[in-house]
Image (cartoon, rainbow over all chains, first blue to last red; front, side, top):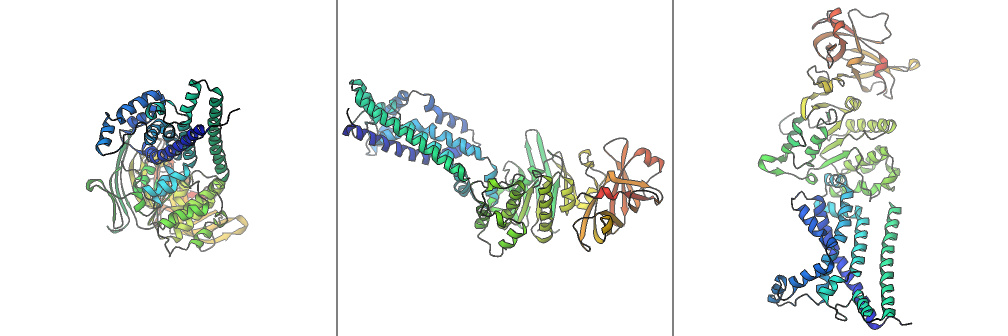
Length: 227
Length: 362
């Protein structure tokens, strides 16, 4: 019976680091975005909402392919980065982070959007009349009331990033220690017929995802028991 | 009322086929009630005064402060208007305890030192509730907490949007008592939205009657409710509000004797003590007119009046007779048949009979 190799542990650590980084960045981006989508009366609301939801229906390879073109040395962003003296993003950890953020964006924004919507206007109006400005209302009323939604969004964003494959392969390649995450490592094992190792790593991923979801759900029930 | 005090608003708002076009002049003290049927626009008015409906255009001035002037592109957001806003469902923050709710506005008002928080907490009986979570409170408790929370924010203007309409009868009566006390003790002006006439009777100093997005009448409570030129949707509410002093209790009969400018009334005894001022409403339907002083009627109250005007009611068989007893206006809704049979016309002297039973339950 084989055990997880150093390579496997490296891939797992990278996966977790990627998922954690992406989840935190997505919360920072998703909270204001979901807030805007909930409260704006702009005519851009629907197009933006559709754009955010796009990765749900798009094959990950399509997303990865366009990102590769866009971020690569010949792409618009890639050229701009080169001109600024920066390294282009494909086949780097930063590139993986950017691609994963796009890929998991709807899974974070949607629960946040739902949570903000469920609060309704009433508590925010009351807070305004009690002297709270817009940012104050967001921090002191909307965020605490939407906390279950924030937890769900974090869990989904994290789990979805752990489980991605197509985008990672397109934009990250499969460089050990840099862009080789658990899912691509499993793919390699299966390709080379090493089913025992594929099993082990797959089970590890399964366990991680299960524990993450369980932790969130326990956290949520603890909170509602408090209320 | 001078130009630089009170609330002065011109509100215009069209949405979903509903047009609001209202001009309000509210006094700088006391309770101004916006009264009307549902859909008359009273809640929209209140929300516009609070600044919660940016789509509503017009002009709102409160005292020296210009809160909104669409022509000058002036719009002061709600959180800078120093409001207390109490809504039907209380709107308490579910993520905070009662004490946390009370603290919310108090902190943002800069912890005003002149506010006697302990007195307010005790006056509204919320001390025992302080550590509790909001969702465990009853409807009446929530509403009391909401009112104290609003008062803790040291508001310059208090806005009430049907605060009692979601409560059961017992809780409603208790809270109405609290509001009466507040009315008697607080200098802060209040704007109060309701469609319940007994709340108008007990709380209003100034009354604005709304119908289909228009203010059809506004003025002092007594004068406004006894007008004859109101639209059909409001006729049912019409009547007199008598304010008088309790002079005696008939303990064995459980009746209270109240004198006012136009005479004496007997009514079912309430909590009010002798010497206290009370209000009671005499609905236009509860008044019977006769030409001679009735001697064998079961109605306990007979008021000598003079007819001042006759107007249409909301049914062709009926009319409204406006009467004056002393300085007090009364309304009687009678059939046209009776009007003609008794040859009633302005300046005629009549006796108004009012059943004491009709003056109870308030």
